[in-house]
Image (cartoon, rainbow, N blue to C red):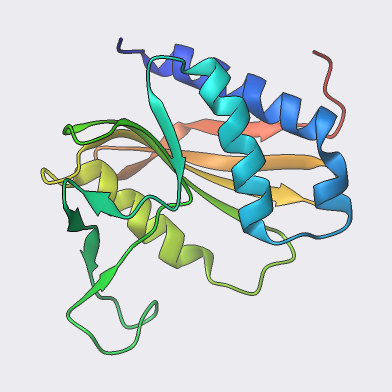
Amino acid sequence: MNYDFEEINKKVNIAIGVLLKKDSNLLKIDVHERSITHKLAEYLQTQFPYWNVDCEYNRKGNAEKTIDSHSDCTEHKKQYRVFPDIIVHQRRKNCNLLVIEVKKNTSTKKRTCDERKLKFFTSSKEYHYSYGLFIEFFDSLKCEGDWYKDGDKCPNKRLEIPAIITL
């Protein structure tokens, strides 16, 4: 089953709303990003029941996912392995709906590297994710982010979820 942008956006917003309602303590106590992405992936799975939702999934068929190196993001290698935070896809098929990179506002890691991955994954013929999403979570229990399509940030599409969520 395929979804248009509005459906995907709605489902992502619902999953984030559930995360903020049920697991807000994760943000308050500043747990590792992987704990947050794991819980978000669980809630995304309920929104995309006919798709696989995986964290840190590093495979393309039997091969490892790789991306060309960028001096700001890696050591001086031609390529490096990548582990997208969350993907919505169909395993072992070239059917990739959504790739998500997450950061906490308390993180010291560079946002530009995650944005570069999203541009690559949404423009690459090899991976061709329909959409990419960068999400920044704040300890004030809100989040915001940017959508990507065809290798570009979507200028008129922003993810902004206020601190108070009504489900």
